[in-house]
Length: 530
Ligand code: NAP
Image (cartoon, rainbow, N blue to C red; front, side):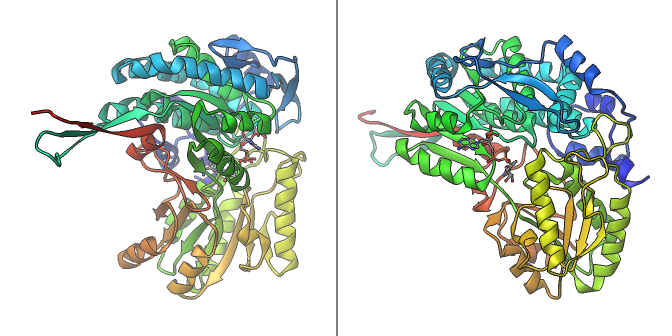
């Protein structure tokens, strides 16, 4: 079976195997070589989503669907066809402030529910997400472009976060501190921080939204979420299902439109006690600076520049497989996508040849077409950025083994690409590519590989391929990354901490640590107790 066909997985199996909590689900499906035949036209997908009542275009404030107060809308496009999918309410400061006020009003009653009561409502929400996996997956493909099999799995990824946190919060204990005086009793209580402002990107529009709101709401926080204007529809569908699940009005609010206005409203409001953001490092830095005004908690999931370090003693098949899965997931448009492929001299040529062969089996096309493994890039800006990076690399001596140009399908489709002879001073080595380009750079020694890997302001994900156990430990400990995969590709999981070192972010999403950003720690001291 080719890598192309391995990148398709069977969705009906996903339902029955749904106990999985994590992204590894995707790897699992790849490895099991499940295969689905997909072919559908976008119009029938839209009709199906509409029939299910999940095609929402207004914001959600205090449990009510609302237009922008001035009636403005913005267009959402299908990146695979360039067609307008919807006109969505274009909101700004006023609507954001009203959403914050609703979230603030709902906080007292939501935070007073027991964790079991909150979890019960969130479990209903989870069940509805699963029941609507098909429509939600199709909606993701319509607005984001990824192959629909990936869309279906994104629903599982998002739902797995919800399921993880509605359970995990039941184990969120405080502490008893040994008293410092005989008549004192000393405790640590954990309490929800309050209203959370969440801002999410377009690359995994449904999963990123759920990854943020799940821990926050499970803790007892209320949220106002702003999805990207490029892909608001799947997050709006999630909001519709929250209402259907009986999540009380005001607990989950959604506004979208003028990003800086909405962001500024979050930052300026003393009612918003935490900002959680996933997106570019540049915007993250602005939000961090702005959050200082009212001294908010901040959690930042920012850009990456992931190295994949391939040593002479790596297993060639395992390496190519691991790299293909994580690189071409979502057309390379993820923060953990390998950006710098560092390859030791002895294995370099053999590896480059095997990788090129694997890349040639990928099939580029519209996400609803049968057998497609790679969709379009999100927009023209992304296409131009990748063209410029490849052009710069080639002008400085890099060679194209496969791809290297726009795809004949036009629009924003780009050919899966392998470059060799890349060097550290090329732009492609210091820039997050966010596209289907593998840039191979040679190294001689382990020390050199570690130096090259750490030579970046980013520190999100790093990958190591080696069969040498000692080397695996040495290198894993030496590299400055928050997520390290050894002989494996798509490693995130709802139960594992996700986040970066250095300028890739602050805080962790997922895992037991993922609750911390939404909790205040209160020291309670009772005196005169005996
Ligand atoms: P982006 O341009 O930073 O946008 C992210 C979000 O921020 C969008 O909702 C955007 O709104 C909003 N935004 C933009 N300017 C803003 C402002 N001045 N105030 C408030 N909000 C503002 O990033 P992107 O291009 O969508 O996403 C790609 C980036 O996200 C990459 O760097 C990637 O590595 C990173 N990412 C990181 C992780 C992680 O977990 N570390 C995960 C996924 C993606 P509009 O779209 O409406 O303008």
